[in-house]
Image (cartoon, rainbow, N blue to C red; front, top):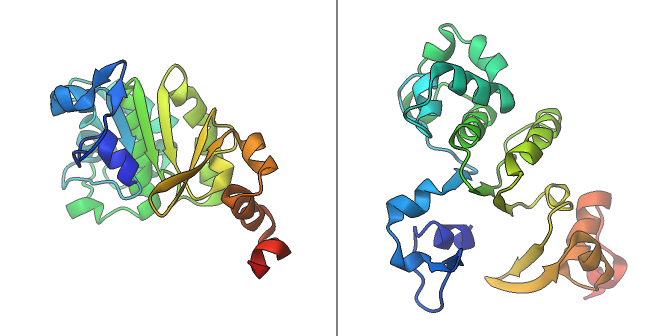
Length: 208
């Protein structure tokens, strides 16, 4: 998540550079940088406004039909329509009238609506049940098309189809490769994958 915050310039780096399309992000305005990035955070911020306005926050000029279409792609339309006033229902302070999973689906709808060329998923499905996560994963792939996507996840099943995986340990990159390459290595990723898939740690790692 610190890595993501550096890309968004929520923190300024003290050494080195981050380039996007050969442009140093420290040399561009924050508005132009963030206009090019869609973010689905682990704990999305919602406003005490209508659901419609909360989703439209990602693209203020969007028509109602575009907002509703984004909500459908995020599997949020059904629960929104079940609310007393549908899309005119208020989310409450910081989204207090919605569950964690519902707030996250609003954030996902925002990303669909914004359709920015860079997408950041920061534990984007952590508050979703397994069935909803599976349904949304299929729509993520369409959202990711022709985009540069950064995915931060502890659920390794989310990462196995990524083009490149960076494994961080104590703030440092300790492994770099595809899912298949990292499983062949005797490293942290393989240990975590065994824990994720089998619920056990290999005996060798237990002794270490």
